Every structure is written in structure tokens, then in C-alpha cells.
Image 1 (cartoon, rainbow, N blue to C red):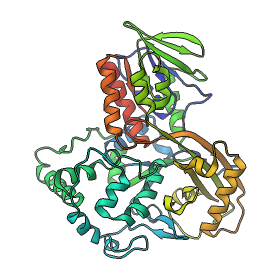
Image 2: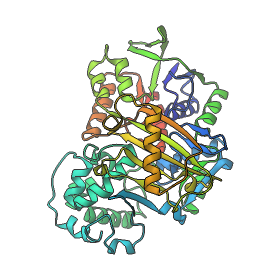
Image 3: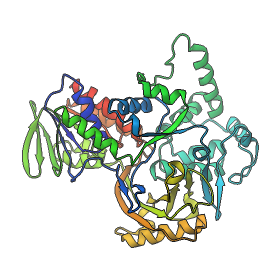
Image 4: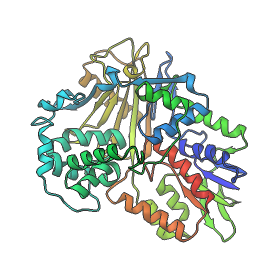
Length: 476
């Protein structure tokens, strides 16, 4: 019997890939809360507008994205899919809020020759900055340090730092460049320059394409008809009509119909690995299985292993997380002064906002819907350990109305505190994950890992990690 811990998107995806594997029978998924879906949660306002507490769009670039689109097609969700194409002006219009003004990020070739308001000189000048910057041999460093060395302080502060806020609600001074910007980091380490390294890599790929199309060792994922359509029509992202929560809901129904048992309000409190079985303590009662796939947050899994495997537990618990306050606001009619994807806020602005997504610009609705994300790595700095919903709501409304110059009051809202929702892949993350997996392998523990703690926080990443976890667990 295989037990999957956690009923978020990675746990449900693991159940999907496990039930497709004839080598695995009798699959049980245990979820501690009263619902499946994890951080993906869609709600409706009284007027019928969609509020997303978690993610709302999924990217279409790369093998992990192709894998997700294959899943969508298999689940027969094509008819509910809403695509955003590369020529969509809203998607291309991304903003940074700095010095009490909104600034557009460059989105065209000509813009790199201009001095944009966020920077001290044209972006093209940074090519020379990178080429003349000395090469520094390192196993890893923070993204902020790396970008500051190679491209300049203003790019690190005004562009990269807010982007990291948008990706993982984290501090660019702590996040690993070797994890999140691996290609750029390796370009410096191998060629002494980001520009030179990426250019040579692209030339090498072009000239060796006829011999081997997979020169960069990316995983090969066969494309479904839907994935091919996305590529041909140049999608950059997609969502689902009525909210993204339909994905975990349909996924749960799919695996249940094929024999997977999903038990909610079942919290695993301890794991003990014996020579011939795994013992689980669930809601105070003992259960047994043959193998475990954990989609839990790394530090939560670490607590379950503390007694039997303290070294592994320590490594798992060393992967930090951050808490994000999310406020959805609905305004009557169209109150937006501009059309854009949204804006991000550099940490140096010392505002509680990480960014604001213009939901109704991306996926048009009859009213204006905005999602305000706050806190992240700075949650306690701005809100303390236990903020009230009123505090979060007031903060979100005041800042958003001021920045966007909206005079109207919202007609509906939703407030959520997503505690420990995003793992932080800090400096040394790759080495830590390798130690974790090496320990599991060396001790022959029938345990496979998936979820956002290890290989990426994006939905495509965690779904693909679930697929790999099923492959891993069948080898044990």
C-alpha cells in the first residue's frame, strides 16, 4: 500500500501519476484539513466575481508547463481553459511601484536602448558592465548579490528584488541564485559573464540541434494536442473559468473514481520506517503501509521524522517558509486607470505590499477585481504575529486606492492569511536538497518527496515533482 501525505495540488498529482502506474496498488491520500486543494482556493463574491486566494494563472513555457497541459487535457478541462497570448497588451504591461509612481518594465527590443525610469542608464549598457565585471568563483550566493555584481545596484534593487517578491514573496538578499537563476549563475561560473555564457550556450544549442535537440539536459515531455495548440498560438499563461480550484477538485474526483481513497481531517503525526513496513501515527492511531510519498512542507515532514531520523529532520526543517496576507477587492464597474497585469513593490520602498494583481484585466469580468499580496519575508515586520482581518483589509484598501488613484470603495472583499505558504529556496538550497535525497537513498527509506519545498514553487514545478516522486518510489 502507498500512502500520500497532503492533499494539495502536488499530493493529488502524485495520486494521479501513482494510479496510472500498474506497479502501485492500494493508494491512500491523507489530508489534515477538511478540504483538498491546498493553497489553490477560488471563491465567488456576492455578484459572482471570482476571488483567487492562491495562484490564478499558470505559465506555458518549458517541459514542466507541457506536462501540466497534458494533465489538463487528460482531465478534460480544455473547455474551461482561458488562454492569454503573447500579443495580449495586458500581459506584456507589467509595472513596478517606486518613488510614489508606477513604472513600466521594458517589454520590447527598442526599450533596452532607452534609459527607463527605474534605472540610471539604458539596459544595453549593462551588457558592458557584465562583460567587464570580474568572475567570482562561488558555489552559491544570493540573487541580489549576484545581480548587483554583474549588472548593477539599481537593477538588483528596482527590478530583481520586486520580481522575487512576486515569485516567492521572498527577500532577494537571501534567495539562492544557483537555484532560481541557475542558467545565469552557471554562465558566469563557466564563461565569466552572463551575456557571454548565455550567448555561447544558445549558439551551441543552435549548431548541435540537428544532432541532439536536448542539449541542455531538460526533461523530455511528450506534447498533447493541447500543449501543441498552446505553442502554436503563442500562449504565455492560462487560467480556468470560474477559478483555478477546479483543477484540484477535478483531479480529486478523477483519482477517486479510479480507486484512490482520499481521507480528509487525517493528520499524520509521526513516521517510523521498519525493515518491512512503514508505521504512521494518524490522529493518534497506528496505520501501516509499504511506502510513503510526502507532499508536505519540508519542515512539517521534518517534525514527523525527528525521533527516528534527526539528521534528516534537521535538514528538512532548515528550509524556511514565509506567510502571505491576501486581500481580494471588488469594485463596481471599471475603476482602473490603466490596463496591466499588475504591479510589484521593491522592498526598499518599505511598504507592506508585495504586489497587486489586476485580475479583471487579465481575465475580464463585469466588475474590477484586484488581489493584494502583503508581507511575505516581512510579514511580522508589518503585521506582527497575529494580525486581525480588519488590519489586513484596511492596509490593502488604503494603499491600493492611493497607488491606483481609485476614489470608489470596494463592494466586496475577501481576506486570508496563508501561513507558511511559500518555501524559501535560500542560499545553499541545491546542496541541502541533495543531502536530503542522498540521506533517504543511503538509508534505503521508502519515502519520496514532492511539493514546493524542493524543486520550485510554481504549479508546473510541483506537478512535475509529483510525477518524479512516483518514479522514485517505484524504485524503492
